[in-house]
Image (tube, helix red, strand yellow):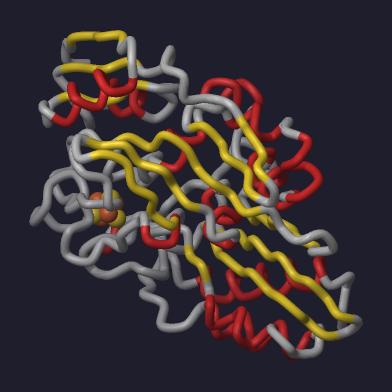
Length: 329
Ligand code: SF4
């Protein structure tokens, strides 16, 4: 690991000013991704600004909105009673995402900014990685790819967005609060991430030094059922091959409202308005669910190792919808 200067920030504005003015500086929060990547030689900041003592934690409820400070840990959010009562699929995604030790370290802001698990990205001895260095190519497209994306992907990059928590959050229309050198702003999470295109190294809309300060999460209306289904190679300590976050409000046997997002298959947390459109007002049966799943996985970009994910993603979504609808046939 390259040597770096360590600075403990004493107030939020000081931290933002320091990182905004210095492209070689980075924030340090839970460190569960950042320090791994520094040890692997993928990241090499000259300065780390430790923000862990700043007053950016805590969960507050205002009506039907939950405000979660960026330094809230994943475990604190998991244990929140409002999350258990009104956002059960968000709680499920947190429980399925990491061990309790990691959940006690990792922060909500850091989780949203976690980097891809692509093995080529994490191995600096592999020269071809457009995400590490734009214009070098993509080793995964020709190499071993399994934990990679089929949606929002292209020959430039098929790196997966690995956050479980972000999948229900995009389905919920969560909003991130940002603070930068030019002041505060709010960005819907659905517009926060950028598909790789020809610039896989640019992953989100954050400006240099801009800091996530909080996430605002609308609560599900009472009576809405939800689930987060995660399919993976082993039942713990593993990333998703596919996942689905589903929330439905049923009016008898008819779907009144639907929210759907996919994980484990896309370069960003993948909201699926096409599927929601098919579900709204339709009977809650297998025919509807199958049509929604086919619409959700439209125009995939696959390589040899990821082709299986097309059918698996459709089956995952159908099973999640059937679970929420009470096993509809
Ligand atoms: Fe790099 Fe993306 Fe290709 Fe992985 S998939 S090697 S992160 S360009």
